[in-house]
Length: 275
Image 1 (cartoon, rainbow, N blue to C red):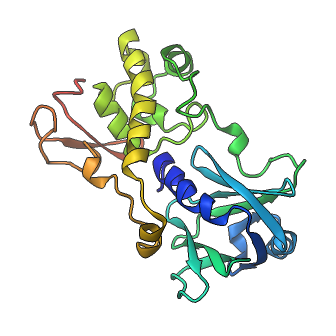
Image 2 (image 1 turned 90 degrees about the vertical axis):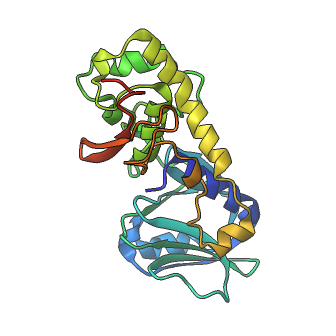
């Protein structure tokens, strides 16, 4: 699933290319992808709308329109947003196409069809997408040791599971929770109430640092993004532990281990992240 660094990359690549363009037509091939309003109304409302810009909130993307309306979308497991010339053949499982005034098309494809779109009017409350329930952005200066400890410090839940709670800090998923905990030297299976003050302080420092690092490593040109169909995230060579089970720890050389926490795979170093 794309996490915050990947979603931020999509925003940075696509936003400069679509700002100021008009959505001449929206086509929905699978009606369930538009969660609100229904597909026909979704397309009708968007015809003739001018794109003002894009924003990101956690793992959500927003396309802001000059009218004050906004499109909210979540890529979920396999969603992909691609800006392509109309002449370029569509990817398989393309479910929504926005025909733009410069001859380009903004296309959404999704193999597993979990991704969703919501279109909200300027003064319409968002009671649909769940974005209002998100916690702080990781880069918010309020994400401190005090903040994390206040929300998780008495919890018996494992710290890996806590990091995945979008209602406290938004945007962290399975990949970057592993990377954050490794850098902070914290065993992912530790219960949150067992963390010491200095560990909360390390965690608060590492969360924004690691996410900013991977946003930087994910940087890609618009040309390369199109050529790789929006799926070439460049962080893989820089991952320290995620997906590296059985390889030497980059710090101490001991073999990395894999465990399952809350139904999610987690890779860690038993030496550097002591129980």
